[in-house]
Length: 106
Image (cartoon, rainbow, N blue to C red; front, side, top):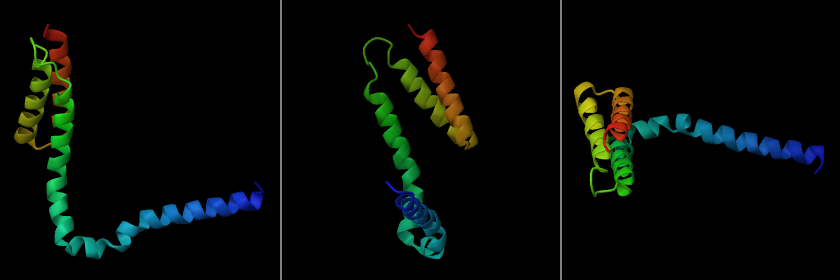
């Protein structure tokens, strides 16, 4: 591959990357006024959390006490989020609860 070919390839990569990064700013007025985008912004966080919870609980052993750390982590995350409405506190608290319960529950 010649240096000119490499330079042309890098220029195309740069242009596409720049265009993709600039597109939301160029379309911000349309995005701000669009009902679909507004509704998607309201529903997407709930959908992502549901997928994460289902994915985590999918491989949870339900025999014996194996389910306690998973359910405890989910409950702690939800309780902390409803209490303080802080994503960082909810995540750290839920993960800490899950980790502690993994150590404590037989």
